[in-house]
Amino acid sequence: LHWAKYKNKMLSHYNPTFGKIHTSLTVLNTNETKQATILFKNVFGIMGDKHYASANVDALLVDLIEQCIPNPALRDEIFCQVCKQLTDNPKPESVERGWNLMSVLLASFRPSKEMEKYL
Image 1 (cartoon, rainbow, N blue to C red):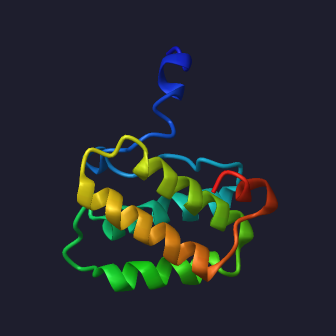
Image 2: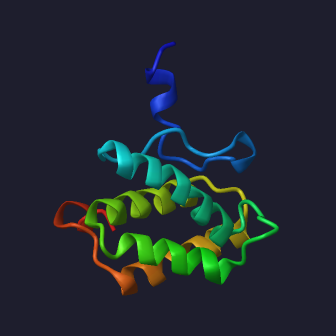
């Protein structure tokens, strides 16, 4: 498998029909990586890229924020995940929801100094 041909897609919109992401987009420890891949489901649901019958958007958002507030490493990961879903996203409604999500996240907690310059 030649990784170079896939690296450009790493940070662009991920189609949720393929399932969740398999690893974090940032460098995290094992537990945080597992948590990040699970939280990507919340990003899908909040942005409307995937609909979950048992979850509402408000609950997904609260869960996402509550898990990120005490964990600065997860915050940067979630910022990257939202950026990933915004990049080349073909659905205008999803893009609008993504920018709304980004503003709520930025109002809820700060990115690291390293991430701040990219947001």
